[in-house]
Length: 340
Image (cartoon, rainbow, N blue to C red; front, side, top):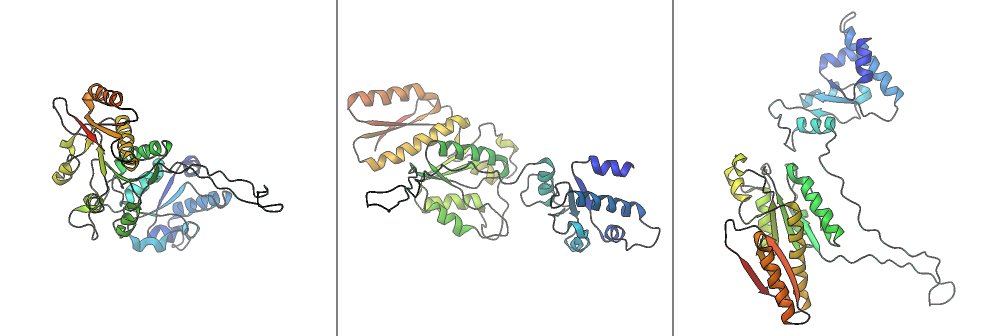
């Protein structure tokens, strides 16, 4: 009765499959031996039978890949988790333990992206000027203001990266995100192809570097991304939260990487900086002599606003774009006004 209550009341039931457990669960053990496992297995089969085609509670666990043959027949089609006792890092994207932890705590590895903008479609039975009987389909998608590539980020900052993507889409920009990093997959061509579409590349940086693999040696995936953007002559904005304590980053190379030419400001301020940078890039296509880009330190917003306001007073039709960054610490007023 105790065992039945535990199985019925549990949100998740972990089944660690070994040869001995399988033998007892499948009724292949010596008579009178392992009766507790046999009873438990019958309770699990009954629960699976009552919830046909839907299993969210019973999770197979293995400690060796060779034990996959011992998974209960009724659970062979279910996702199983292989736990390596030497890799119990819950933050590692390649750890079976991390995948299991995410499953139990309902924290998916990939966040569901927001829906794209709805495309307006005209009804097909509306007559056109071509004459009676003719029909047309009108597709009027909104043309994006530009395309932003958000470079792959580690798990500790994926939520922030998704927030930036949502903000950009709401402002009318298209956001492209390359394939997710996987240690056994060559994703270089996908990233380069995605990069070719981008007007701006954004790197959202966190505490952890990507694990090395054979495709991104010796400098790693994040450095390779930056190199490719530079080779393609793409403008890059790199951001990390000012709340990150660099002293907690054990890898010295990664510590320098997340502190070199990186914007360190509040996420909401960075959203404004992103839009200002995109406005600057857009202004270049409108011809010379009419556009002014004001690049200033976050502490000097008032002075920068005055510069922009005076410029608009000097000449009719001058377009002013602002960008606030925090690249220089403990500086005096730093305002750079660039004619585009």
